[in-house]
Length: 455
Image 1: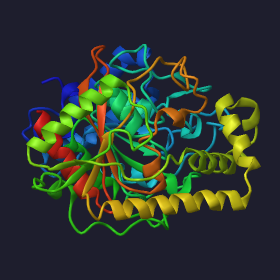
Image 2: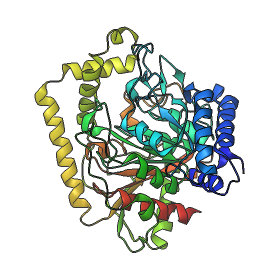
Image 3: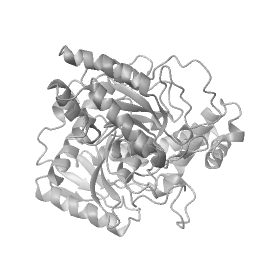
Image 4: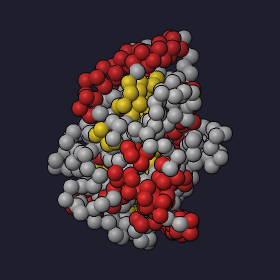
């Protein structure tokens, strides 16, 4: 099999059997980047020389049958939000000078490096990961491998496009409003946002309790293995959770039949594209018939868009005011968010946090009756690249077209997007599975059940 078409688990099995080497896999991935990324623009940095040094070291370990970690030798890339030793981290911004010492790994990067994974480069992001599509004044537009005329989504669109196009089997994204799940849905891959604090982060995200980091993969199994790596503790994040008592790779495939689940097609207020809704309805019927009893019910909260936008703007302003020259160079839409944040009072921010807390209480009560909540991940398929909102929609803010994702950043719950089909135009549709806080293993297990069901 072509290494660029293999999952991380398949690559490790091939290494173990000495049927493929990390050097061969790494060269294949970088060759693939050179072949297709001129059109897709998923990468903002590629370093074949460094990657091959790491791959040779991994190959020596496999030849001695002493791998360093779970995914030793598996090629991966780093979203250009995470600090990476030896490489600039510019966050998609012209205001960040690349010519400075880069001597620190973020916790996610440190854990991947300790596991022996091979870093091939860094993935494009919108400026400071601020929106649901991936383009920036620094790196331009990232496109969807399924249809390059459309957006890959964002803000982890570079990572998602890389995984979907065979430019590496796994990545880690950040998600403060949907930034893992949006591009996963648009590109047809798996994107998992774990419970806030499950994956340590440093420096602290300006988006505070909204911010999460999580796997972007082709299978739920790969996501579970990646979680076992990146959820290890790091003292630099004072909000990080204690390590789980069980492994995700040991729990993702457990029996879940018989667990009652809820399905909300609209959350009570979302207008869903007819074709997307039909695809989700059909899959939910199959889930119910296969042994997960489904109840159609809305969770019972109003759209928290305005409080979310206020929290988002205040967070962005907190970071941007520390970046000299940012006002002159930033994405205009980000400048508008900055203005919203600067105009907000402390009282208004705490009022928005109170809305988030009330939302969390509502969802906590909801999960007393329903183990997980299923929704569409996105109400629409991917739209034309180069736009912050769907052209002709009348929308003005990216969050308006992703109403299923940001509420569960406000509640800090785990949520995963898995691919469930395609529209008549061939564009992917994702299904979102949301669980109560700290139920990351359950969300992965239900996602695996649906993945198995769909074959």
